[in-house]
Image (cartoon, rainbow, N blue to C red):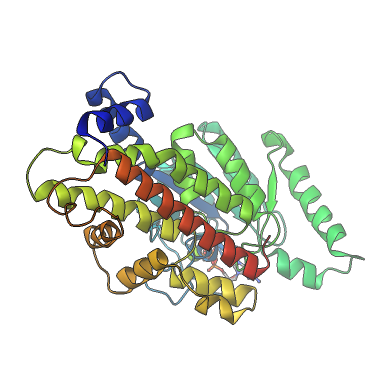
Length: 375
Ligand SMILES: Nc1nc2c(ncn2[C@@H]2O[C@H](COP(=O)(O)OP(=O)(O)OP(=O)(O)O)[C@@H](O)[C@H]2O)c(=O)[nH]1
Ligand SMILES: [Mg+2]
């Protein structure tokens, strides 16, 4: 075991700060910016274009799931409704009512939707480009807000278009949207099937959002997107790798008030939260595995052998156990167990534990993508 002073030095060094106090402050800031930064995404467009469906799929929910946005063939959304991400509660999608429907006239829509509170807008359009699509783009731009133009239901267009091949259909649609949008600065157009985000331009959309959002909002977005490729998974892994030192500083006893018993509970909650967030962000939870297995038509994805940590996280999630309990289990994996419960564990030990656990979960997620054929 490391001595207390060498452990403190290791924590200070990892933080690149001169003192333990500064290191702790920086660690707190980093963890807050990782888990507590808010992101408000407005999803707008004409009625019936697939706004609610997109929001559900982004959050990995089916329309019948608890907390899902209502979606259907008749107008369903009648007021701006916030939908919190199920595992990243700081990420909120605002499902705005369809513009141009009898309930919402285009003229008053902008005012009623309180446009200023959103970080950016997704304008969703389907079938033909509409005047309202352009009007929305102009109004959002006028308020100096960023928008991204999504052309949804691409699967329907492909099935009904008589072009020689799929590429030609996609090019035709893309050009039509770009042509119609050229007065608002040639924004990129993303072709999407809201019922299957893994197809077409979803990944490109995530990449673009990620590169254009302010730095502190990028991680929140990335952690909340479904794992649709190895590239997205690896970006998520990097976010957690960057945060390990900070989580270790905060959860190791050196940062906590020396209250016997209490410090232990706090410490373990941070370790538990870290792994619970990885578990969901990497798409290893039952719900995500079920969705993925349906999409790629490989039922065995739901029953793949799980590593010990993953098994524990799945069980804790099923039983809705708290993060402290998960952290305590993890502590039992540390070789110095026994003395652990009595005193706060060290920075170095926590750092090792977080590193090993993260690698284990990342490898599990890589295995799932490999089995799913998503290399
Ligand atoms: N095939 C296909 N169907 C879609 C797609 N997006 C949405 N739908 C279907 O289109 C219908 C309308 O979708 P909603 O998500 O309710 O549309 P909305 O924009 O929220 O509608 P309002 O709330 O009325 O403004 C539903 O039956 C969806 O299943 C898509 O990309 N492809
Ligand atoms: Mg809706």
